[in-house]
Every structure is written in C-alpha cells, then in structure tokens.
Length: 242
Image (cartoon, rainbow, N blue to C red; front, side, top):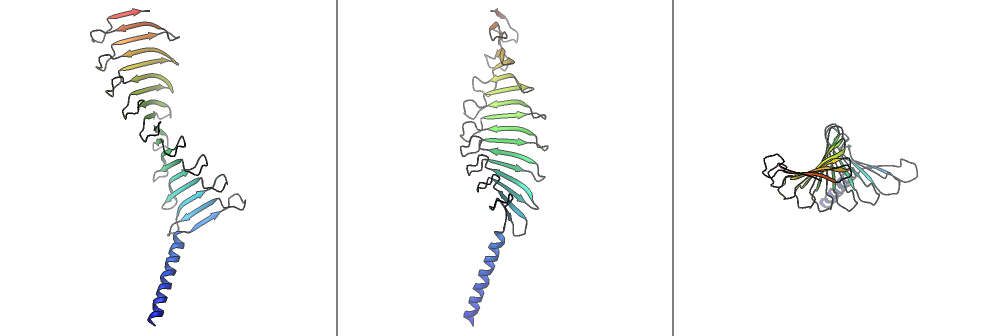
C-alpha cells in the first residue's frame, strides 16, 4: 500500500510539473498570410497575459521582430532584425505610458550596438549618441531642438574619451565650428561659415577663453585680412590686408 502511494505521489508530481510547463510555454501560432506556414507566435504568461509576440514579417521562416510586454499588453521593448541576417540589430524601449523613450541599433551590422537615440515625452528626438569606431565608447553627440532640427554636434575626434570639437547649426546649416587644440576641454579656435565656405577664423592663442587673432576670407576662400591682439586687451592692434 505504501508503495502504491509513493507511485501515485510521483504521478501527481509529474502531472503538476507537466501542466506547469505547459502553462508557462503556452504559445498561440498564427499563419497571417495563409501560406501554410506559421509566421506569428504569441507567448502567454501563467496568468494568461501576453508576454511576447514574435514575427516573421517577410515570411522567410526566420523571426525578425519581437515585441515584449508587461501587464495588460503594455509593450516595453521591441526588437528588429532589419537586414534579416538572423541577429537583432535594433531595439526600441518604451515608457510605462507607451511612449518611445530610446532606440539603439547596430548601424553598421558589426554585431554590437553603436547608435542610441533619445526621445522626449512627445516622442521627439532630442539626442543621438554614436560610437563611430565600435570601441564601446560614444564619440559623437548630436543635439536637436523642438522642431527636430540639428543644433549642435559634439565630437571626440581623437577617440580619447574627451570632447575636442563642437559644430553649431542654424536651420540645419553649419554656422560655426569650435576646436580644442590644447586638450583643455575648451574651444580655442572657431571657424565661421558662409554656406560651405569659411568666412572667418578666430584663435585664442593664449588660451584665456577670448579670441586674439582673426582671419577673414572672401567667397572663394581666399584670405583677405588678418588681425591680431598682441597685448590681449580684446582689441586688434595689428591689421594686415592681403
């Protein structure tokens, strides 16, 4: 009798494990284009709520989009394989209110994420961070205004972890570029543009935060005048016309 009870207990335990596994692994499969092959898989949690939906959007037999959910079908993350190589290369993150907050992607399909986009509460992009050389460190920062226009781009040009160049834009046209030539994290040279041509260059030769040397160029890029502030009082005291 004791032996039968033990066997019965094992059978009950096996049944419970089997049911538990079935509940945890419940998946609804759908053939959305009626080609005889499943192309959408909806995974449910033990409570019956959708936890994940997988898609084969181009019907090639491979999953290329995954949506992750919390609570009552609140999407928190979406993954994409945009080049259909079997690897997810773009991930979008959503707030509790369902708004897109951040996007990261492997922009060069190197197997690592090198591009991040950040969005405000209105789902407008405010900043992009780029790891240009794929070393795991951001070296380009792009900033946008409320109209989604680029207003400032910052660079770590020599990839040493420090900013050394600043590009300023107006109406998405380059107006001014600042350079840090002495690696003190502050610009000491400024180039001003008219269209694609440099119109003026300012230099802070003593690195006090104020320009003391100026060069002016015509519309063809030819130097036409230079000025220097030799005693650093903020006023040019040497002028040369070319």
